Image 1 (cartoon, helix red, strand yellow):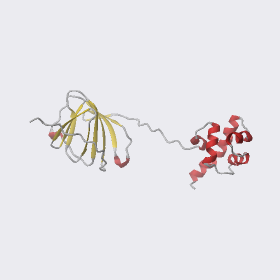
Image 2 (image 1 turned 45 degrees about the vertical axis):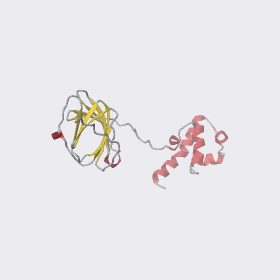
Image 3 (image 1 turned 90 degrees about the vertical axis):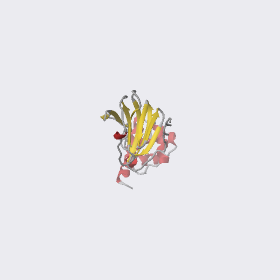
Image 4 (image 1 turned 135 degrees about the vertical axis):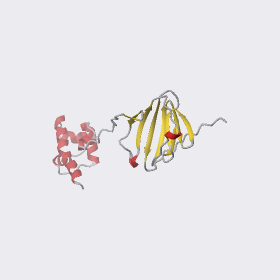
Length: 197
């Protein structure tokens, strides 16, 4: 057993004693409430017996504390992402991840309307990208394809294919993107719009 686990288990006894005393309960009263014998409770509090889940669950219920508080589990940390938006190439990027497995990153993009792009603006690099349009209309140049994606549509592509994107009209567009270098794919594809002959 690791030293860290030993430390956690050793600290349970003093916590149990403190909780019982805060309630003003005797070992006999606690034994009646939990169904655990007085001698077992006494040995738990003094460290003479290792706590088990079968013993800790009724104690947590009677003391009205979460099990992780009873054993002094370390905090898991704040799961919220504290996004700091930044601007690049006239677009606002809002990070939505700290970094996912495989080097994946997620961003919300906010693009102003009225910007135009042409095939010469296309760039390529290693990896894959996935886009999902939240609002507005996105123009995606992808190699020889000229696509327009509306809200609710998605595109996934190999970023080694030259690509560029901008608002499809004079209104802003908001989109989510996930991209990474390891070839991770989300298999939702946009279909190219039909060209009128």
